[in-house]
Image (cartoon, rainbow over all chains, first blue to last red; front, side):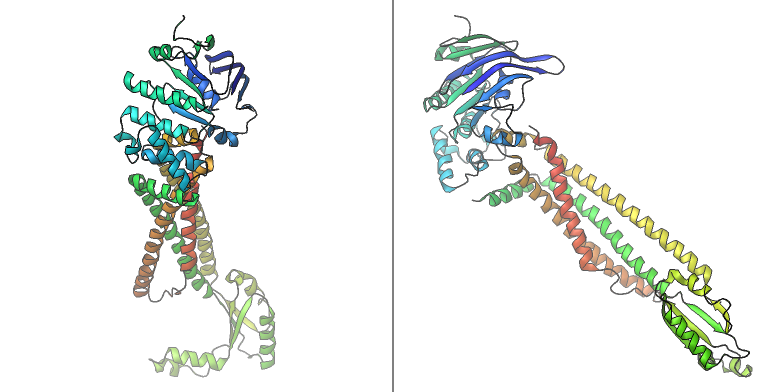
Length: 227
Length: 294
């Protein structure tokens, strides 16, 4: 699904984002990306969705080499990657339903079947009754579920979550975790960057630990810290 | 729901939500187009007036009186004058015609006419030109002709008039260009402000996989709508103002014959509307450009 080969990203003038990172993530995996702030988690994610490009090395996502991907094709790459962020990134002037619909309309799929699809996915995340609420009328956990619904409505092969539980209380976080777990069960590869030690320890999934831009640990069924 | 529907709903929705910015942009477009329209109307009106004045620049050629030229000589000269390309008309005013005109001019004081013995007036040609600027060339051709006594064409008046009109035209052209630049800057700045307020939205759209054009269309529709509405309002004011002012000028200065069709209203309206639409669309596209590089 994702291959990094000796990837280095330096932010001018000399801040290291990632340094010589080589890793491979298979289709259908569930991967935690852990490490302190500034360790390169966000850089990794921004590289995968091609928000930024590396200074050295090669990145292959879904069989496509991102270095040779033409910039007008980037939107099509992103339609195959669902993104969930710590600050939800919902369109403030659209209802929950419209936010989910936007991801479908973007792909030119604004038909009546897609309306049904959007309604279904909102039910799936447990927000069917709040479809017509605006983001500011929803709690943090509810907003995050809307953003997950939006990320998943196209059934992308890859879903990336950047600290999705960072702003949520532990109980709500569990609910979000379970959603991501279910999404992973449908065959979607899930990559989740997180600070949440307890969560990582409980899930026992593959853990990739970053520090100062380097991969310091890559463990099949790991915990947040060293075992 | 088709894409166009979607874009239209998006555009209208955000125009309503950001009504303060919408109004700011509308007012900017309105004022710029209003000034532009005012200048256009002014240019057309002054141009028409200048044409009127220029038409009055004609040449009077007085023939010798002692002895009076024969009919053959007169005819020959008229044929020649009319063969010159610069000349529009050449009216022969015989001694008798001139005498009749004089009598007509002094009909309120016939004693003046009675005091004149015989008919001392010369015959003349009154010449109008296609292009008033050629007056000097044409006048110079009469020098040394045996039957011509004198040529009058108000040399100074003509020259000063042409100088003034030429300068006025140059000045107005520069003014219009400057004004155009200023309005585009103002409007694209206003639109950029309104887009800046939605920078985050654009970022999110890009993250969800929207193509640049998918993001751009609603903004451009917004810009066009603002440009069109602002320009339409300005056009109405310009046209009303024009007919009001022309009426006023006619009343107060009846001697200034402003032609009714001095301002091609349909053409001016269309130009102003087009400028509004182009400015709106361009302003949106330019304002958005920076934010699309995510």
